[in-house]
Image (cartoon, rainbow, N blue to C red; front, side):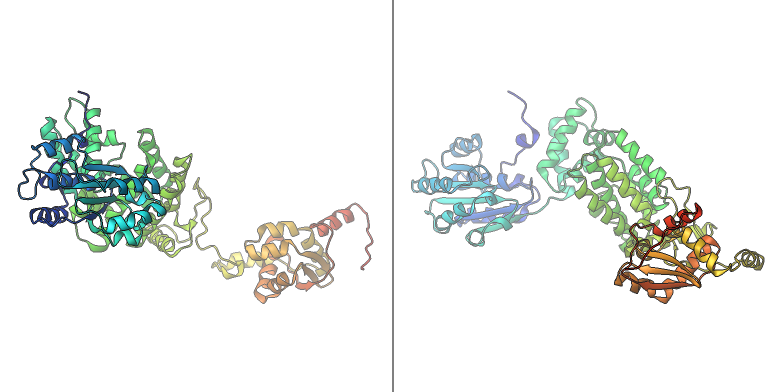
Length: 542
């Protein structure tokens, strides 16, 4: 006989073998013992929690010839036929491939006939949420008042997609996610039955990776056993087989990010990629690691069961949790959660991961409150280490000059200067004759625009025409909005200071608006060039 997958080989055959769903098992067992079985049931819950298995056990129990305390005997003719899948009175329907109204009509016609061998005809409709609207409507009356020998069991992972009229006609049972301890105990039993030696740490990691699904856990265990066939199933082997990283990798990456070590963080990512780890799984596990650090940071309580980590990893988590505030952990989780959505359909996941890590390490790239808090934390760390407050990141290969403390206007920033330097500057920056100075300012206008750091004013100045006057320069705004922006006293002072810093010339600045616009954006520069080669252009105002 060919090999049978473990999750099929160890599928529960009695209510007592069902793990983690005691509330469902107890209720159904009592109904069967007291002959109070309903006519319609709805089993809901995440994948791999036992919905279909319980439905089959229930079908055996109501048709068993020799039931024991509500449990099927698994030995009578009916039980054996149901387990073999050839019992005519138990019908499994995949609603994903039988969604139409014709499929439901066929079921309605079939239930008119009494059971062939059993006491009840049981219809198990899997993925019931896939039924079309017309099929669900056709099913309503039959579901509400079926023949007394018919039982319907609807199983679904998405009950909210079912019409309310369907939900109200069924007894609903919610299957819970199975705990890590329960899954680990069951996996240990399976390993013992299969004669496989395994480390407890490896078993618990598989149980945690299953995310509450017993079927997923058994499938992962089957994969790990096959990869290390004939050997002890170790924790390292499980990590290699499942393509996940160790806690130390997450800790090293986290510390590099907190310390703004971009190069070190990128190096950690390269190590993970070179080891063949799946990037999506790595990001998911990193979010889980940060979530654990956030829980420790907020509550200070250590609950290994909630965190799903072993005692041997707790000292490392406790140290990492002290390195940042809860707001920082929230910011990291927010960035990585957005990354998980982006990389789902991306062709180059590594680049997106690297960009996300750079954003985490450089909070100055964002302007939200969490990023500002992280920037303050980094500044405090640098001040503790004796670094000057005027931080310079010019050597950073990823970011360049840091925008931290960059003023919106030059006039807003005052840096104390020694008296000697002030005197030297005053000696150099001497007011020139106004007419000559204005012409020089117009000639250097492109350099002045390049030095402008205020984005709003830079746009307005770039579209404006500039003309030298006897008593200064006049800036002709291109629109009423630009005129209002440039006319502000702070804006005029900023432009005057900008001209002084670039050219060393002090001139008056006048703001005006007119319909006369230069034919090209750099008309003033062109006029200056033509004047230098003794060419005069006469213009006539219209």
